[in-house]
Image 1: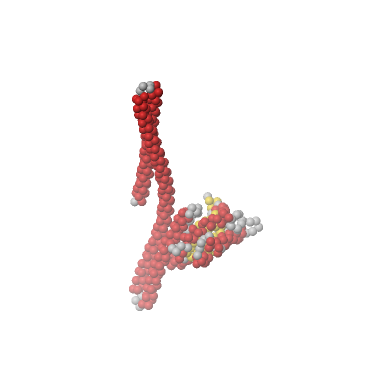
Image 2: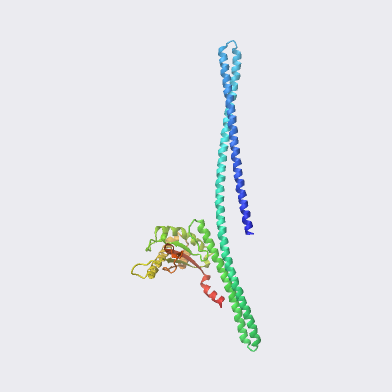
Length: 388
């Protein structure tokens, strides 16, 4: 069905642009035909004007040559003058019509240019819609895979529940005199089933909210032309270290500050929106380095301090009261909320990035910004309930 819709949409778009192109071609041909017609008419009028002028000159010569036919010459001269006046009037009218047609042609050209601009804009909008559709389809596939995994887990737990129910029935048959014990066992079984249902509901809700946040972040960052990738599984965003810091330094560069000034208002505009703020528990700023150390020092500890100081430098920059008020435009309440949410941590080179089996040092030097949901704090507890 999806394939049929895509083919139909593609065919409709193709027909639309073909019809649009044909219409423009016909319009241009019509204007060219009108211009040539008016030019031809103008040439005819000029020929008539020249002929009348020649007749006038001949009549004038005759009048000078023969005084005997002066009256006849006067009549001929008068007629020639009338013809000349008519020819001049017709020529003036033709020139006026030509100016009108030229104005209409210019207006037509303007209309064609506007239509071409609208066509280009529509093409860009269509490309953006296709990209967003592809991203939504990818998110849908990921979410469907998670739901399938949860459904399989629930089916397995229900199978275990049925087994426990059978064991309970057996115990009930074998322990008729142990009413209190059986009653307790029944309560434990019902409590376990309730916990399983609640855990399943929490997991499904958490997956849904996280997917919505990731989708909104991707859309808003792309709309603001901010070149950054959002991890479709975790929501983590990687900021290149070379843009933020010089090698071995912990002071933010001007390029890094400018990037944060563009990136953070969009990022926080999503996370601190009324729709998602109740679900956000923490915003984590993580510093990462490559495995290069300094002579005479422990490489890991040296990079641990370096990564911590870089994460703290970013946190100090974005948590400044004046910055949050003027650049991030956060209300007093949101500034306090943002301060409570932000944590900064250094990871040294514990999470290196490899390319073709070799450490990619430039990619490993980075700062990651992540968010954790309120529900994620109880993931381990939920997992234990499901597994037990």
